[in-house]
Image (cartoon, rainbow over all chains, first blue to last red; front, side):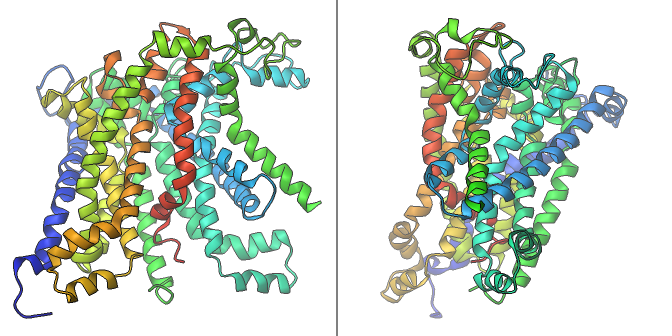
Amino acid sequence: MTPRRTLADREDVLGGAMLAPALAYVTLLVGVPFVFAIVLSFSDATAGSLHFGWAGLRNYAAILGDPIFLRALRNSAVVTVGSQVLVVILATAAAQVFRATFRGKRFARFVLLLPWAVPVSLAAIAWTWIFDSTFSVINWTLKAAGLLHGWLYWLGDPALALFAIIIVQAWRIFPFATVIVLAGLASIPQEIVEAAIVDGAGFWRRLLVVELPLLMPVVAVAVLFGVVYTATDLGVVYILTGGGPANTTHVLPTLAFQRGILGADLGQGAAIAVFLLPFLIVVAVAMLRLARRAEVGGGGSAR
Amino acid sequence: MKRVALYVAALGLVVFAGFPFYWMAITAFKQNRDLYVGASVLHHIPWIFNDPPTLEHVKLLLGQTDFPRWVLNTLLVVVAVVVITVAVAVPAGYSLARLVGRWGERLGMGIFFTYLIPPTLLFVPFARLVSLLGLQDSLGALILIYPTMTIPFCTWLVMGFLRSVPWEIEEQAMIDGYSRLGVILKVAPRLIVPGILTVVVFTFTLVLQEFVYALTFISSVDKMTVSLGVPIALVRGDVYHWGALMAAALFTSIPLAIVYNAFMDRFIQGFTMGAVKG
């Protein structure tokens, strides 16, 4: 570095100037609203007026005594865990399939990515039609195959509707998880896999003992994003059931929307949304740990 | 035997992933009398065209609904959000990768984390902000808010992309007498072009897919975007025009599917950075 530097050569000045707009945008329009979301949950603000008054813990007391909220909280947990279990199974299987070569692989890959590419709201409306109470093609197929004798009201029965929501969430997220797991598989050193084959390990042994442990960090990344996408998703439930029948299938985002936006009770809506935080904090902490471990573990091979 | 298992598994996955799209396509072109036969009528097979295909739903969608208007609105928002995102995220990504030194990593991580703060947590305060700014029920609200989702991710993308670009070209330019600013203005843009392309594509797909903020801020049918208008306003009262609905879903999915097929790997690099080291 030369001792005499003009402003046009000061990396710290240039760096700061180029970073400032992004930092400002993120601070003003994500950071501040985020804090405001928590502040609102302790207020009696409504959408109709600009009045703002402290309500203390009243919003929280109200929702914690509300069976619809408790049900929504439980549904959020059930849907998130249920769909992510399915996602891990489907994505691991799909990654095993797609690392092999077979005829029509390009087409298969194209189709596999479709659920992730299509807008959530449009996928949800397509599934609404598939689960239609009168015209459901699933019911027709089950009946034609002789497997169904009564009738399944997919979106009209609380338990079935929750099951349908889990299926749709898993359907839309597993392609993304598959691609991540595939990227992880590609990064496993070939020598390790070959050594296992030489040692006589079969397919299952190789998968369960050698590859899955090495894949854990990558599968974890897929699951973490999956948790965020499912727990915070509003579109699928809003369109599929609207929280019905009789408010039994609400999840936290749909209930927060119903109370906070449609019901204009911003305070209560914010309080409901705040219960998404535990999901997110768990994810953020896990991500940080993974990143740190990758730094330590991958330190030798990183440039 | 192993091959058979492979093909069976591949077929199963393709059917599960692709079935709703098959269903969109066949519904979009079926005549109503072929479409609306109850599922308990077992001799009428819903999986195939029992009557000749028709374009009546497509004509209804393009001629008698606001769908063309929604496409226009969506494109308008896409262009505005792309401009804002590129202008803000690309310099930030460059700064994090090349200029701010060891703080870059942590700041980058911090900015990326804001991508994890979901719309469903922020829509309540944003509802307040948008009405304070007088932007309720206008595309301006979407143009203001969508960059909160694209900037964090795209800054991270550009930063990661630049790490894979050798520093030597810029170094050589400085040896040749360019100032640091000169390098940024004259040399760096050429190097970042593929990164910028990824940013544009990511922003395009995100705007097309976004639903929560659109639902919160937009109430007039003529201001809606595609992903909001189709599921919300195409349903007239309780009447679902399934043919037109599925045609709209299909037409929107096709360009996105093509784009995703081409760019998926680049997006994934953004997500796995740190967990996968090549």
